[in-house]
Image (cartoon, rainbow, N blue to C red; front, top):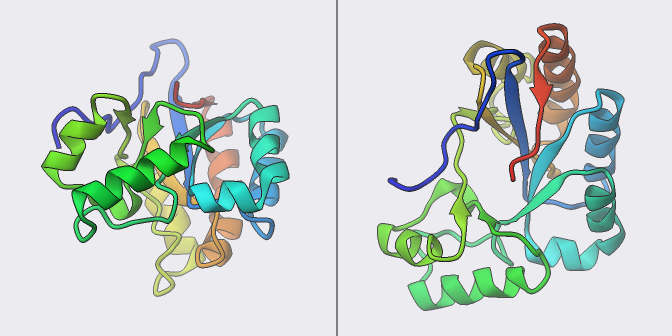
Length: 192
């Protein structure tokens, strides 16, 4: 999709990667993610589902307090291919009333060109170049980690999920990713 951000900026003196977390915040996973990030002095971007931000305002506030950025991930995690344009755009707007950000990521990475064109008038549409696969319960936690370790380059935007479905793979892979790329002298930055 033209006009979407697939990779972030990096510098020649110290490479950067951009960790992103979709679908939260939720109490079972997001606080643990924030603790892991704090241990490594890493910043990240959380693409929040609006209804989760409403249900868990303290966790949502903690994301901001940790110096991380947030992005809009629709209010109800809608599929951009199967939802009417009018309903989808209203849902994005509803999320915007809770999640104050000009960053947007479509759930499932699915968005029609027409919806993208409308949303690009107000948002920076952020995709990724490394999908961890943490949500895929048919892959092992080690395979999830290896996927990120072998595909990440300077400037990579990496997708994880702070969700129950992803919890097993995430709890294994995230600390290993943070350690590996810290050892390689990468900076973990939030998208702006």
